[in-house]
Length: 111
Image (cartoon, one colour):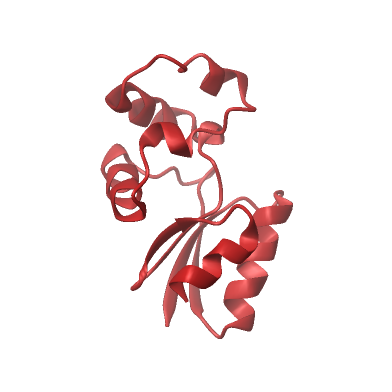
């Protein structure tokens, strides 16, 4: 099985999710999204598959995300592509779907 994780190595939840993927024997592609931000199109596709709105994917602990509280989806996606720190992590995609793995064990739903 192949999995792609949008990963921040400094995040404990992201590291735990990666460990679960590896323990499950997944062939993992790691995208360090702070270094290689996903595009608006990438984020739109991922959230659509996950059944999430862009607002659901905002990391509201970040001041820049709080400023988007009343923004529309298109504005939120543009902001995420420009400033990826506001993207909630980790997003994980397999052939079974996409999840926001918070907590990490949510990844089991798509393994």
